[in-house]
Length: 319
Image (cartoon, rainbow, N blue to C red):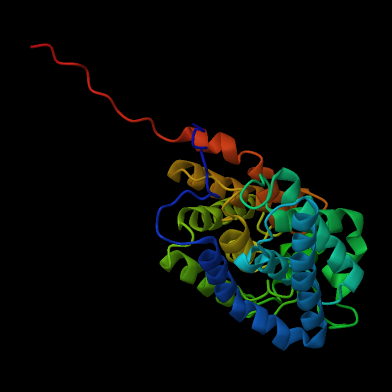
C-alpha cells in the first residue's frame, strides 16, 4: 500500500480559515485607495504603468507555470498583487519595456526560481525592483523621471540626501502625510497607505508586529541622527512620512513568505528594517533605502524564526 505523502501548504501556516485568494483580494482592496490617488495625480501615465505591470505579471506567471508543467494558478490573485505592488513603486514615466523587465524578474527570479508562491526567501516585488534600480538607475531616479510629468517638483529624500535637513523644511509634514510629494505612483500618501495597513491588521491578514516595529525602528534611528546633528539630519516625522516608509512597513515587509512567523522574530525583523532604512538613507548611495533594507532583512528571516521562546519545563517531582 502506498504511504500517504506529507503535504505542506503555502506559508503562513495560520489556521484562521483564510485562503490564498481571499488574502490576496484583501491586499488588493487595501491598496486600492493609494492606487486611485496615484491615478489622480499622474493620470494616464500612471494607468499605463499599472496596466502593463499587472498584465505582464499575470502572463509571465501563466507562461512559466505552463512551461514547467505546474498548475496554472493566476486566478488566486498573487500575480495581480505582485504586478500592482511593482507598478505602485515605479515612477509614472517608466517606459513599458522597463516595467515588463521588472515584472519578468519579479515572477521568475523573485518567485519561481525558488519553487513558486510561498517558497521565495526574498520579496519577489523587491527583487524585480532592485534589478531595475541597479541596472537603469537614471530611469528609476524620481527627480529625472518627473521632468516631463512635474518639472518643478523635487523628491524630498533626494533633496535631503544632497542638501541636508535645512533644505527639506519647505516640505511640510501635512503635505507629506496627505501625499503632496513626488515618488512612486502609489507611495506618496502616508495617510492612505496607513489606512490600508490598518485595514489589513484589523482583518487579520497581517500582524501588527512588523509594521509597528518597522516604524519604531525608523523613528528611533532618525532621532539618534537628529540628536547628533540637527542641521544635517531630518526629523523622525519626516523619515516616517517621506519616501517608501509606509508602503514598505505595511505591504512589503509583511510578505508572508519572506518574513518571520514567530512573534519575537517579527519584532526583530521589523525593527531591523526600520533601522537599516535610515542608515541606508544617510550613508548609502541611494536617497531611500527602504526596499534594500527589507531585502537585507529577508536574508535573516529564517534565522530570526529560531529566536522563538522555548517552552518552559518543570522538574519532575518524586513522591
